[in-house]
Image (tube, rainbow, N blue to C red; front, side):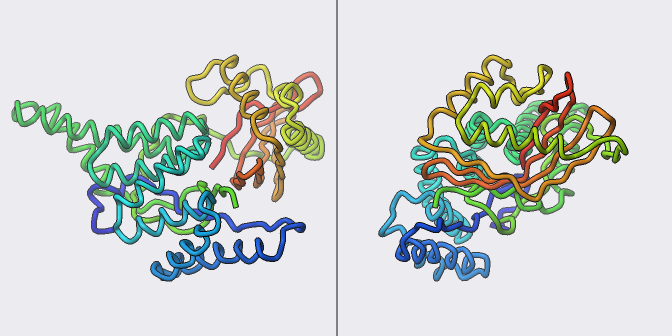
Length: 337
């Protein structure tokens, strides 16, 4: 994909495959299959794409609906330059797992590589709709808008070469893409046994930030603050989510919680209730936690979150901005990457 840098380097493909965590009660044969996907992922990261594809296809012969293996297959096809086949794989994943944002993101990258910016835009909007705090999709959407603007400015100059304002705007956008650096890999997200999760980026320049994000001051430790109280609130939030207790879950968000996207608080709560109630079971785990304070009533919690629901597994880094209200800590803003 590097030979298509003019088209694709400004948007980032998610190439992360999460390690499969085998449950203790899984049969040995199932564990062996899980090893096949792990082995395929290792081969993929080593550049042995043919061998990785053989492993994946062998696994999918027995489990054709497995989201993680299918996602890996889409990545291998992308790396092999088989864009049409990769598009079919990721499109199929969006149909079977519409709640996963990663396949939509990767579809957008492939569409953009073909100059199909309208389709790329639609795919990224779907990724954001399913996961409003998905930073990579927001960044990529900003780049798609910039690409589309570049095309519009270019057409305007073809009609009026003397328009200096348009020349300046076009030059700024061209400079943005010509001087960008290669993107860092997008945040891991695992899929059933997306965005899958863990590897290096295909070929992309670091996109311009699509929307202004609140400036986060470097947290300073406060002598009188105890991180245990904050973590207790976070653990209660995860426990309520795992128990599918949406009432308790939503009560842990502050009244001034920054709702992601353009949703109203009411719309967001309705969406969360639906997504919490839908799976047969949910298990949310928190690890690698750190707590810091900017003052006595504001804390920042960073951790790795694992999510399991029926046949879906995800893993991501999350940041919660907490505020102390009425003696209790509540979530004021959440960010996922």
